Length: 134
Image: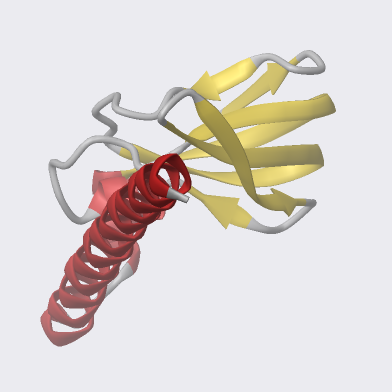
């Protein structure tokens, strides 16, 4: 099944639950992530590229927002359809494990970013305090 989106139209939002992935048939899709009110572009994808695949392997929320960049058509691939296309249970297990590992890396990177921001704020406070005594 194909779906069409207008320029800047949201395909899915960060934090939503999903059960399908998408293959771009025409146009482009931007993948962005928002943290602390700041939006960061993670990727711009074009025809024959796919996104949203981790939703096929786990029940976790979407890790980013997908938005059409120009007129865009995507093919929707459900979990059932994808699973039916994989004959080997080992391949399914391997893909599921890889998806979980990617989620773990995402969480670790986010934690590092949070710790880095806390260190910056702490150092800024120390510098401000030092300036008051100089």
